[in-house]
Length: 124
Image (tube, rainbow, N blue to C red; front, top):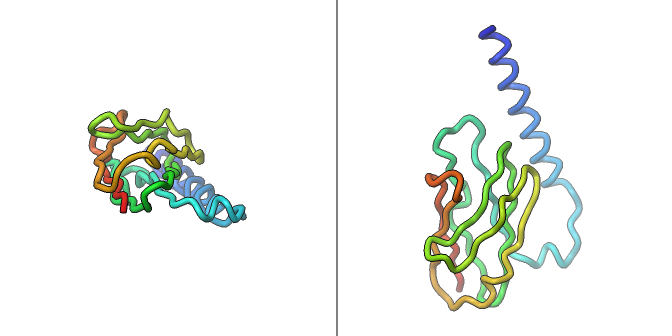
């Protein structure tokens, strides 16, 4: 039984890697390339669920797009309630247009489901 669990974890990890590579390799429209993007990537099997892109920097007036390359759902919630996303499914993304109205500054955020996942949106 132990061996099957290890193989299952390995196969699941390989599937996540393949899905991530497919998303990265997918062609993007020129409009999509102009939108600054963050990535929500919780490392599989890491109980801490960190945001590897802990700081997302955008220019004032832009929106931010968060992509979920993990094997579970996540969301992005401002620590002060200024913005929030719905749950972002596996291999899905969500753009938060509301941040375009925020003044320059640093805005901390977290995942509602995984409170250890924290980051900061920096608007310049």
